[in-house]
Image 1 (cartoon, rainbow, N blue to C red):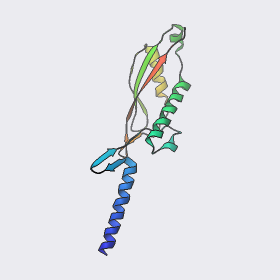
Image 2 (cartoon, rainbow, N blue to C red; image 1 turned 180 degrees about the vertical axis):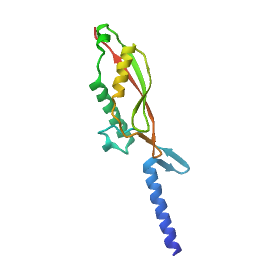
Image 3 (cartoon, rainbow, N blue to C red; image 1 turned 120 degrees about the horizontal axis):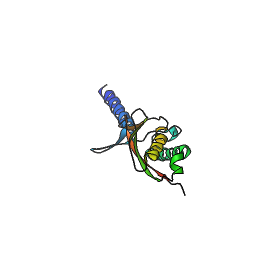
Image 4 (cartoon, one colour; image 1 turned 45 degrees about the horizontal axis):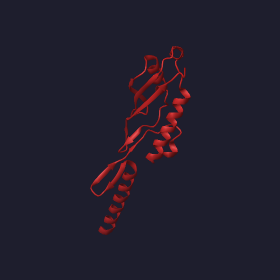
Length: 147
């Protein structure tokens, strides 16, 4: 009876440890490594669980989103207003975009960059140790009229 109980406990512990490793990190001797998983953009669900594939899919989808939604402000274009705008934002614990700051360029260019980033769709939030975590990003926008 005791052997059976010990075997069952050992089996449960082993399965629990394996599940914990997959979900939030790796255990190697006395060192625990927490695995941060990026937010999951709609359409990137197939890459869930593989941080490298998730990052690649997120970056690809973000680039496509920015290119598709980019609009040079008409007045700024007409006035040959050019510059580089940096947008700092987070995907919060609910998977929504929050702009932290914008810098560079004119107010019109900053407003366009913010508008573009705020149109990012809601997604599954980033995770750390199995819990939602806000993940920060910094994206540059270069505005050139070509004139």
